[in-house]
Image 1: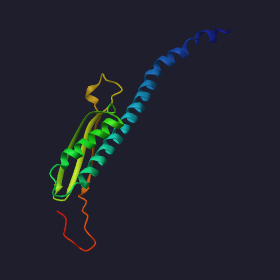
Image 2 (image 1 turned 30 degrees about the vertical axis):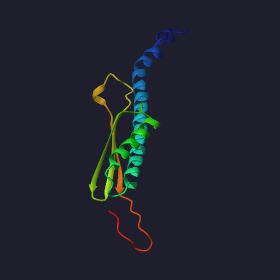
Image 3 (image 1 turned 120 degrees about the vertical axis):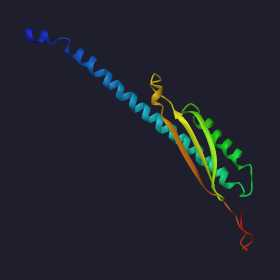
Image 4 (image 1 turned 90 degrees about the horizontal axis):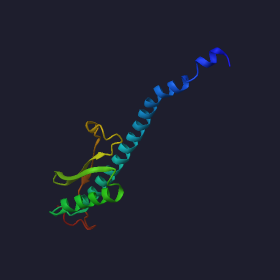
Length: 142
């Protein structure tokens, strides 16, 4: 072996030691973004299902809020209770004939040592209350 070859011995290990934290940080960031995205999908699915129940309830019914919240919670529990931690469901009637359901929660954190980097997820779904009228032009809804 030449003299030059002996002096370069171990350079690869030093380079790897300097580069590895950066590679690890990038991998953890990719995993965090994937978990945030999946948590967002869970929140959107739960909000859509809750809104579907809320919109299908008759316009003059008073118990639609509880049914919609219960259905949204069921979806979060069925799809991913650990993907969307601390999930809260709220309902709102924005206009007399529009109902909305909002699901809010936190995405799973890959690095739990940084609680100030909590990724909050909020999804809202809703629309007008469904109204079915007879073909003969009968009475109006609501």
